[in-house]
View 1 (cartoon, rainbow, N blue to C red):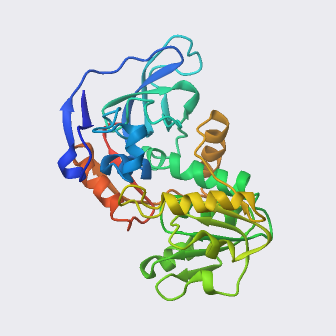
View 2: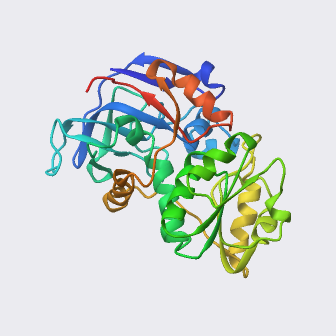
Length: 334
């Protein structure tokens, strides 16, 4: 099969190469998926670049331990491993092989990928493979941030910094659907798009610094971390929750991890600072599927790339100018 392999750290066009590799075999509780579409997410470009450099202690010092990037997947079941009874060859599925361990999984920037059966659900007929393949990490992160971590509901005031990105476009829609008054922060070219997703107010960050404004919020989801954590926490209403969801700058040895550390240290004080993680479970995937199938939450896909141009897709993500999500189309049949 063809897969895009990373042989060292650096610019995507220099370190990613399409190669023929053996088709992986599913083990107990696993499924072999013929990949139709996959998505590009933040962990992909960070690992391609090897930034911040301190993360190489976990991912691999000279090259990543796992050579194939990608975690989100939409495709068709090709083979099931021992113990898998609820999925069968021919089923259209979507999900993710993402885990907290960077060494897990075979990567989805490939024609076939092995995925734990418990991290896949059947794809509903009304949801395209492109939408499904680009939705999982961003969609689940936003869903868990709004529903579980932020406990968003009617009347809550929510600010989403980075509202036009992958997680942000989902978070705006989900928070609005939960009844919140949503303020989105984005660049000038995305103001109308963010408003169309359900934001009651939109702040153009080139015109206004939300950390200097008078408005206060019950929940702040920060997908950019371009302000000191203390400045962002200062816009919280009493009892409000700050959810940092970015490492900020990636360059250098530590990049923005020092700012992340300062945010984490605030958890020990009076500010309610909480983390969000992409927890890929059947229950969470079912909840995301219901939202997408209802049509009330849409997957914003800015652009699709072929498997042969994964480097271009990753470079696009690295530009930090992505509107919504980026998809990589592997198989177009069906």
